[in-house]
Image (cartoon, rainbow, N blue to C red):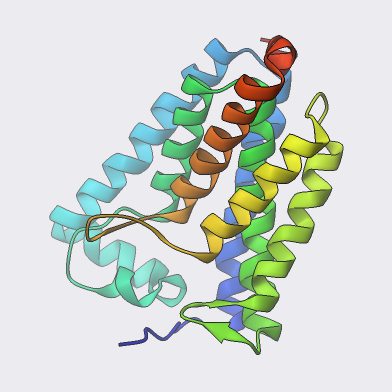
Length: 217
């Protein structure tokens, strides 16, 4: 059965405005070391994860959470079963990226999550006429075009490999990643899949440029 997106445009904009604030993560990371970034991200993720645990299993927190944020929640987030919210997934994604990938790869892929995913949701909601499942062609085009701008401005990133990463991120955003019956949240799947493909391309075709991807570390 096809799921219907319950959010009105103004609530989608509000939700994605909050989401866009995650752009501060790659911006700040450009100027600090990996070690400092981990010192910031570990407690940030732990805090969001703790709120999720309390929201799912402690009734007073659950009531407060839903009375405050219900208008911005999607249908599956209103179901009476445990789930992690987007903030938890996005900080987990940032944490895993910083641990496993060079700085420039992290900045490029996480910026796509922050900017491109935001534009895809808003454009898709406002102008999406050609839909497939929960997505729209218009939203996917907005994601891809904004990703091209990102790879063009991120320093030290090979433009061809950046293009491959942008295509990978767009396809990952468009088609859900599943592990068995579990749908991986796109705040996690988009950066990790695109970063993995980008790093694989560097390892295969431009291994001599990999040290330049860790600028400022």
